[in-house]
Length: 488
Image 1 (tube, helix red, strand yellow):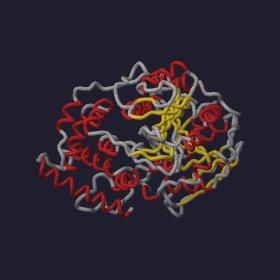
Image 2 (cartoon, rainbow, N blue to C red):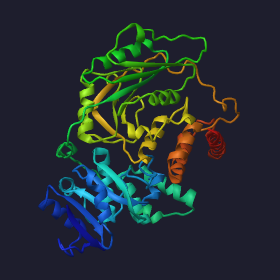
Image 3 (tube, rainbow, N blue to C red):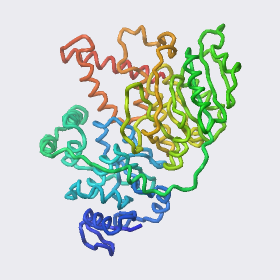
Image 4 (cartoon, helix red, strand yellow):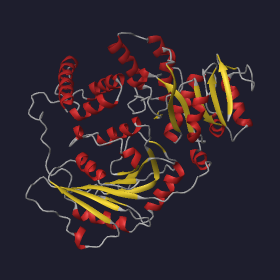
């Protein structure tokens, strides 16, 4: 590891003394292409950070110390990477400029593409923001905490260079409406900057890491089901054909009628190469069913499946190899419908979580559960993903491991669930479950940005084209949603 210390954008350590920091980083990477570079502000203690990053040093990862920067970016970015939990390692592109670790192999790929004519704070956050969707893993570690903020001019520039142009208008509207200020100069100046882009061979970076000792995949399978007996049977046959078999398959069959009988008689009539635990309950709801099933698992890994997916024979081998290669504790697979293709090969941090197409390690499962406040609604997948991140883990998307989602027309909810707000004169918008999830998992500025977007998206949908009447109706519907969300 090569250490570069700096002050006022100039290197103060012996290597490249008094040279501009970004230029020194690029030179270091060219001269030492297989090394990791540690960048620190002068006077910042680095020993604890060095101990923390040992297990994360690789060519496809950028790590920094904690930072509460970019709070205003919540107005325009609707992702789980903004509401950062500083108690554990947290996956986010937002970077502190006090302690940063980046690999030379990555710097060498991007140095000719991004201008170094900015502050290091702007540059490293630009690198992280652009590289994250491509497969570079970005984290903050709970050490020193920086509150370095961009000026209005640089904030609008960052939005213009890393998002679509329309988001600068939304940012301006949010500043005017919510903060009663009008940064017109910053907004206008930002319009002259070109949008940034980045091309990386992330697959090459991910292949550079040496794989440690291989571990065998030892797993259970969890499948909630309702009214899809034939589809579930196909899933079980696919699992039975795998080279690496699960120890147990836990099936939670739901039927709301007390006097109903199971539709899954083949579970006992036919022989299966694994133990099947069948729970037949008279309560519907995927959150409850998954929690019940997970509680019955004992293996180190748990595969969460839907009852209408299909997998190829080599699926379990792919999963085993990927876990050994990536060291991930939570992996979501590409869940494709017929005719869909996934061309991306590099794995990456994912914004969501697939409750029917993921494998999770037990140490993660013990810290998370599906929130039953979201039962029969939407958002339980994303909420579970947020729980995983706050517990100090990450959701990794593996596009090369693919399953087919049939989207079976049978099953699911037998009849529409009757929510208590169904008969209210003013219907809540957005749905109370969505409001509950957003208040629980997103920052206040993210919620305000979402509210502004919904105001425009629902324009005309509330029965009027008159702006002032639409605003009154939207405000009432939003208040209704908040009221019911608080009761969930």
